[in-house]
Image 1 (cartoon, rainbow, N blue to C red):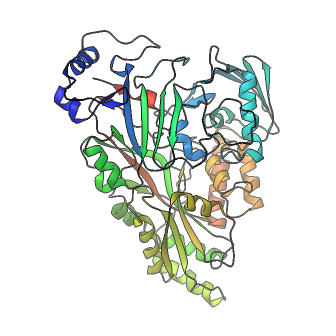
Image 2 (image 1 turned 45 degrees about the vertical axis):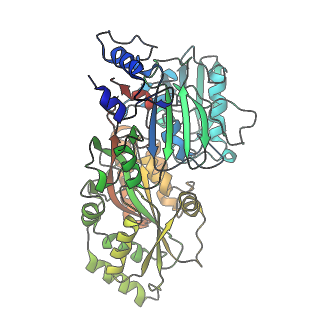
Length: 529
C-alpha cells in the first residue's frame, strides 16, 4: 500500500489540484478506497481513485498553433484513441487488428470492403456516430483540399467511394485491390462532422474516452473523461499535458514530482528512477535534396550513406540504446530485406566524391544538416552535429542548422530550390502499420508530399506490391526497397530508436509499448492507489 508520505511527495491530484498535507482525512479516504479489499471495478465504472484523479504529463512537442485537427499527424499522441478513435485499432503489444468503432469487417470483393459499426456510440457533442458520420469524415480525409496527412501516406489506396449502406453499415469501394485497407484505417481517427470540411478543427470532437477541455498554444492541453463513453471508463478523470522542448527539463519535472509522466527522455536521463526504456517503431533518418547540387548526383548521395558510422552514432548519441539502420522501417515490418544494407566505408565515400568532382560536380557547396532541438533521443543539436561531423570526415562541407518545430516543419514540406544550399533534413519516421508500403510510398512515392522526387519505375513497383498479399506482397516490397536503396538513394537511414518514459508517481501503473510514442492511450494507464 502506498504511504501517505509518498502520495504527498508525488503530488497525486484530485479534481485537478495537488493533495494538500492538511487534507489528511481526504488522503486517508482516498488510500482506503483505492487500496482496500474491494473487488475489481465493473465495466463502465472507474476505480475509486480515478473518480476525480487527474494526471499531468509533460511532452516535447505542442500541437500546431491554430489547429487541433486529426488531419494533422502531429496531434496523434494527444488525440488518437483518447479523443478520436478509428474504425479498428492495432494492438500496440501484438500488432494485431482489433475492433473499435467497427465491430467487424469483410472483404466482399478485392475492391469492396464492408464495415459493421458499433451501436450506441455518440460523439462528445451529442451527435450519433453512424455510417453517415463515418462516411462524411472519411470523405473529408480523402479530399486533397482538406490537407489530411493520412492521404497519400497511410491511405494510399485508390478509394473511389465511401458510403453508408444503412445506419450501421459502411461500404468502401476501391479502384484497385488493397488487402491491408483495414490496417490503414487504424491510423485514420474519426471526428464529428462539421459545417465545413475544409476548415481546420480547433476544438476536436470525437467518440473516445476523453473529451477536449482547453488548449493554450505552446503551453498546455487538457481533456477530461467523457461520461457517455461507449466502452469501459478509464481510471484517470482529467489529463493535463505540458509542453517542454528540452529532455533535461522534462526529466527534472519528473524528479521533483511536478508531473506524473515525462515522455521522450534522452539517453543521459534514461537511468533516472522509474524510467522505462522501450523499443519504438521509429527510425531516425535524413532526406537529401535530390534536385540540388551536389545531391542531384547519385554518387554523392551514396557517399553520404557510406560516410555515416551508424554504430558509433548509436553509441555516442543514443547512449547505446538503439540499433544501426539500413532501411527506414524495422526488421519486423513486412517488406524488410536483410540484404539491403549500408556499411560504413569512408574510403569508398571519398572515392565517389572525388569521381563526382572530376566530372564537374560542385562538391564544395556547404551542406545544411537541418533538424530541431531534442530530435529523438538527443539533446540540443547533438544529432545534427554528429552527422555533420561525419560528412566533414569524408571531405564534404557541412554545418548544423537547428530550427524551432514550426519552422522545421515548414522547411521539411517546402519545395526544393536548386539555387539554395543543399540540405540534409533529419527526421524520424514511424511505421506502426507493420507494412513497408506505408514507408516507401509515404516517403518516396510520386504523390507523397515529403518525397524528394518521382521515379515512375519505383512507383509502378509500389503499385504492384500494393495490390498483392501474403508472400507475393512481401517479395514485391523487398524488390521496391532494394530499388530505392540501389537506384534512388534519396534517404539516409541512421538508427532504429528507443524511447524512455519516466513514471514519477508510484500510484500510476503504465507499461509503454512500441506504439506509445505515436499514441499515448491514457485509458491504458491504471491507478493503483
